[in-house]
Length: 588
Image 1 (cartoon, rainbow, N blue to C red):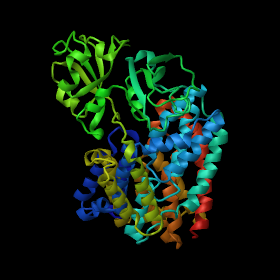
Image 2: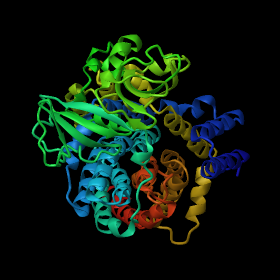
Image 3: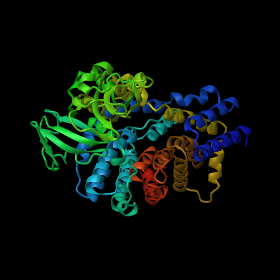
Image 4: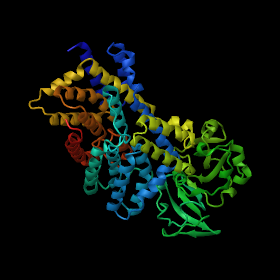
């Protein structure tokens, strides 16, 4: 063995160890390894940086923009309201989680789907008096399984497809993976439906308790032409918001208190919610509601540039001891007061008649530059923006859904390649103003793209120096090694790597080893490539292996052992189905 091969193996082992046992950012680790390989002369600069030109990486970047457009226009909320519905029991709720989530995640970014469904599932848990731990981990697992059904279902599929294009000049079709992904989703979904309620604990999430939060009263109006007119309060999902509750309804100037959940909403109803500041953000994401404060519509700020901000009044505030109306707050600060909290409690009465005092906390709708503008001014003691509080532009929802449909149709029919369709869809999101360019840049996760692109250098080093062949020869020493057994070993190694490091890095590292084993056995390489796609996505046993697993950990109140309890048997079942199915579709 040459020193170059030994050096490459040592570098890869160092990367794996550092990713698994330190908190150093993954992009820093992998880029450092790339630099070491270039400086040591193992790879030429062009070889080391080839991953940044891979079509799979650019496709992932474009799909970030498409997913952002779906989120910013409220398209995912619109879908969630219609496909999730209002279940009456735990089995029905679980079924409502598994079927829509796996279907939508086949065509959308898994992270976006899970992020949008978590609040709806928390609503169910509160209303049905169920622990959210029974529903949220199945949500993550269903999204992972659904992502194996199409080429754009997960970034791992696109990464391996990019490797096949660059190494083998082979390109997979949009639904080619469905022959394996659909059986996996059905078998895995059945396992989750019957066993998840038994295997998962009864545990509440770690959400902030409402009584410990700053309390506001937020008023919204039911839009005359909106989808909520004629719906009951319960069907509209307004009965148990995560961060607040519906206190009163003002209808025809008469106040109705203790409103029953079967009350039908009418156009012009003023709904009064009481809760934490995040309650206002939740209400902004419900189609058919608009702020009751008429001054909001007088703000000279574009829709997509607005956000919610909390500001604490300081001693130098110009409108001290004046009412909100007298202070001319909107014209002075280009912001509208939605609610006022004093000493952690809401102030009753008409908002415009409340006198402003030092220490009052204002909940504002304003421009995104408000925080930077007033952070160091003496008008306010503290200024803080609420994350993800820009109201969706529901008027663009049909455009966003149409663009997604066009992306799927164009790539599935073969009219355009996945990359061409993704580039066109991302461009259309910007042209139709579903998403401003400034926000599109923020939604693209550069750290993920850097990890994927730089990981290609590790795979290239293993191939160029012969280290991948050496690993393959070592595996070939196993007595009676058949293609089936080799496929199972590749799958197992990929699962172990993806649980310890990132799923995309695991796929890139295992690809050259799998190709070398297929070459040594004299069999087709495609079963091994597809097995890597599935195994790299099948991260069920740890919260760190896949981002959606980590996202549900807090809201579900999960512990590390919960992932093992449900994820270990699911991994075995999914692996067995995949190893049995892949060679039937792509024979050795």
